[in-house]
Image (cartoon, helix red, strand yellow):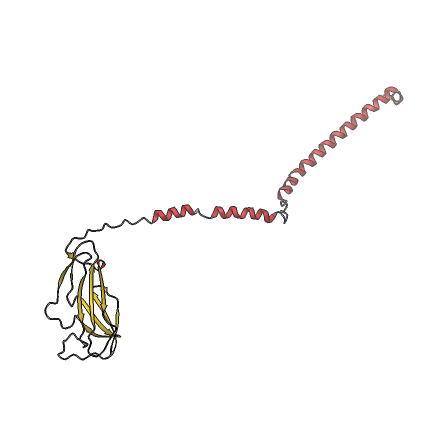
Length: 234
């Protein structure tokens, strides 16, 4: 084409079209380059965003959150009191009471049914005065029972410190057994006098006289013991 022909109006239109096409090509190239660069940076940006630490809680908010978390953890870890109590109740069964056997009238008395007491007249015995005591045995059980009230079974003993001075169980002639029927609430009473001499199991012919001093007297029957009585010899 002749250059002079392109300098006219037709030539101007031709060059403007050429420039428009060139600009369009440059824009397409720029868009493709931008898309490629953004696609390459995307994963790195996402990975850096994921790896970046989360913003720390401010000191003003952290104690409040810690206080809210701690009770919840404590409540979750601690066992329920009602559950543990129910387990203990299930492991320890309630014992069943044994049936009480009814007492038969005339059976031997038991210690739980008897009341034993001892009473003296004086606290001080002078000269040749002899200590005098009353032994009382009462059946408090539901029915009549039988007890041995002989001098060996129902014993009165006098001591001074750890020394045994006298006992009704010493030097008893014969079997020494005396069975008594004890009705409910009716006392059995026996009087005991002490001659102020020592006694022994070998029954010496001439027992020694007790010396002046303080003495203790008690009554005994099986496992029963009366209250102690204290008296003095002058």
